[in-house]
Every structure is written in structure tokens, then in C-alpha cells.
Amino acid sequence: MDPKQFRFILWAPIIMGAALVAGLWLLGTNIKDGRVNDTITVTGSVKKSVVADFGKWHGTISHSATLTESGDLSALDSTLQAVSKDAGLVRAFAKGLGIEDANVHLLPVSTDPQYEQLANYQQSQKIIGYTVRQEIEVESSDVNKIEELSTKASQLVKQNIAFVNQNTEYYFQKLSDLRPELFAQATRDAKERAEAIARPTGVTVGAIRSARTGVIQVLRPNSTDVSDYGSYDLSTKEKEVSAVVTVSFALEK
Image (cartoon, rainbow, N blue to C red; front, side):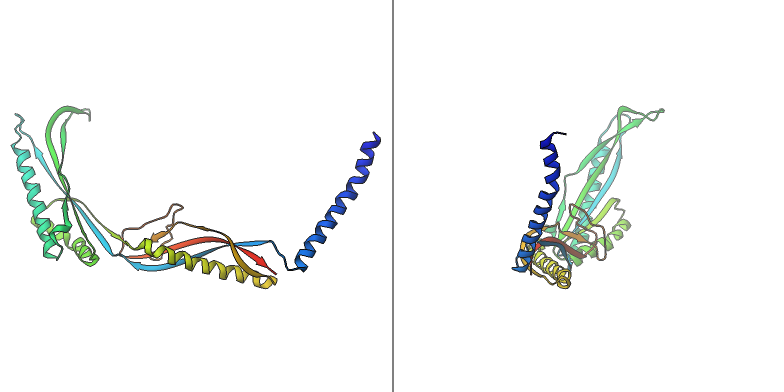
């Protein structure tokens, strides 16, 4: 064996041992002097119950028009008139519930062609009729009125109004104002958790080294349907808003 390699093998353990002793001595000195450079990272969370302050009701009226063999469009004209009449009845119904006419919005009418069905389940290019749809949106900051409309809209069926779709959405519009409060409470929760962990070890929790906020979750009460990108449930008036923050604190002896 080369003498230089032999000397390296001989001295390497001694050098590593000396470095280890020196490192332990420095660490002990830091602890003795009260200098602890470690951090603790914890997650704090908070939940708050809120009630929606804005609601939307959506309804779609649908009628079909069948063309004659000659392609006469009079059936389409009468169908358009029927859809317009039904929309007027919905508007009047909403007004009867105390919803202002300005809050009832009629979207542009859509007209979709119906094509002749062939024996092989394919379609020809021959138009035999049209489906006419009118979408209606009713919105209000009085969510109780929107809820009442949603509940009682079935009464319109008695007036031969054909709905193909209905749904109601509830929003909480003050979320941006609530966000700072939620993150502040979540940070306090994180510090309490850090103190509970650190207390038995004889060290104290110091200043914040770093913090990272998570996404806001707006869910149904008692729901666990969270998402990494944030969830926003629209199905209920009552909602539960939650926030999470991950905080690193300095540890001090």
C-alpha cells in the first residue's frame, strides 16, 4: 500500500472524531448561552359559521316546434310566443313574492334545430322542428325570498310552464372582508399548538420565522369535502368557512 494512503487511513478516524467533538462542544455552548437556532412548524386552523347574503335562482323554459312538410315556420313563431308568455308568468310570480322586477333577468332565447332521425340511428340534414329555450335568472340580496321562489316554483307547473332545469345558488359576498380575521385566528391557533408541543421540552416559542396561508374553504356545515384548490359550496344558505395557515416559530431556551 502506498505510504500516503496508509497515513490517510490512519488519521481519517482521528480527524472525524475531533470534528465531532468540536461540533458537540459548539452545540452545547449555544444551548448553555441560550441560543437555540431550531424552529417548530405547525398548522393552525379556524372555522366560522356564516349565512349567505346573496341568492340566485335559475330556471329554463323549453318548448318544441314541429315543422310541416312544407317547412312552414308558423309553428316556430307560435312556440316563441309561448316561451315569451311563460317567461312573463315567471316574472309576475317572482314579483308576487316581493322580488323587484329589475332582479329578474331574461337571457337570450336559444333555438336549436331538430333533425330527422333515420332508421340506422343517424340523422339526416332535414330539419323537422326546433327546441326553443328561455333561461331566466332571479337574484336578490334577500336570500329568504330566493329560497321561497325555489320552493314555490313548482306551482308554476300548474300554469303549464314546462321547466327543464331549476337550481338555486347561495353566495357569501363578504368573504374578502372575513379573510384577514380568519388567518389571524388561525395563526393564534398555530401558536397555541406550538406552545403546547414545546412546553414539556423546556423551550419557549418565539417570533414567527415564516408563514404560509392555505386556501379558503366554503362548505356546507359539518362537511369534509375540501379541495387543495379551495371549495365553494353554493347549495345551502348556512355555510362553514375554514382557513388554514402553516407557521414556523423560533424556539428559545
